[in-house]
Length: 337
Ligand code: NAD
Ligand code: UDP
Image (cartoon, rainbow, N blue to C red; front, side, top):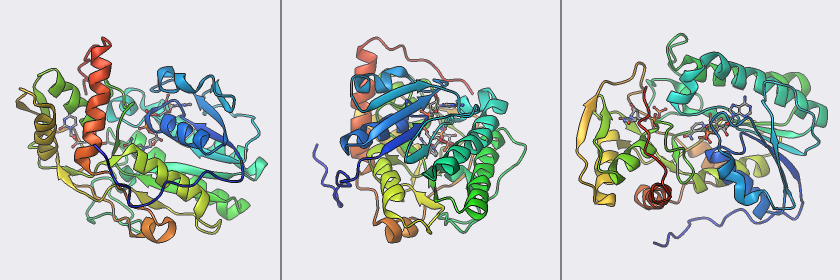
């Protein structure tokens, strides 16, 4: 299926840079590494493989401009780079709730270590923040000026408050050291290389549908999310890093403003896979946000960006990916909350 982009992809840069991507072997990070290499840049990919897979970057290992380092960002890092994308952090509720202390450490100490590195190098640094900083929002759609509604001691707090504190640290480094920082608030992103066992809704539903297992609808399924295809998101990350002036430090929402109920997502996945799966209701997780949709006016204005991939098209690509994994013998694992 061909998808006509509304914008051209960022042209390869005439200026080659050495770029650090923390969390580079994760879902989004691996796509970002690929795009940076396509643009002619050198990439240092740092990951502790907590949730990332070496397989995600296996195809890049022989690239002469690609370097993979096993390293935990809670420990200081000494490398020489021009730009830093700080993506290291588990992103799915199952994974970030498995070891909440490590999640806070990764967000907070990881941000401090990467900011310290950026400050020494006077490098531009971009933080992968999240729509979770808005918590269970009362303002809809979410605008960057909204301070959010986050439970500071709930099961999602290790991630939400960790990311909020990281934003605070980024601004502190800008104020105290005039560091050129960028913060993007990423809304639910999906696509190939999501982990089959991380319990996120898109991967769960697709695997359940492909294997004709019951589709697990948490709560009444009327809660909403907005789903952004990974290629669109990566384009937004690179534009934010490269196109915003150094006095524009965000935060900037990056996500697809199309809003769907989780029930509608389940029905779409069933239709696209031709599955025999039926819907089963399961309890809604604690503090599960009821609605989520980004206002992306700021991203449009600052980086001339908006998503181009419709949910149906992105889902088809993702279904093809998971179908391939299952055909290779990947066992469908029930992700338990
Ligand atoms: P992911 O879990 O696939 O990737 C995260 C990567 O970080 C993994 O490779 C993991 O091994 C690595 N990592 C975790 N802790 C680390 C540590 N201490 N040191 C080094 N590496 C570490 O998740 P993703 O979906 O690719 O998310 C990437 C980033 O984007 C995360 O910061 C996440 O919070 C943010 N984000 C993602 C989404 C989404 O929908 N995917 C939404 C909002 C924000
Ligand atoms: N969800 C669901 N069934 C699943 C997994 C998730 O109904 O098997 C729901 C979940 O309760 C939430 C939404 O889908 O309302 C998105 O969940 P996900 O974990 O993907 O992301 P997040 O809650 O962090 O946005």
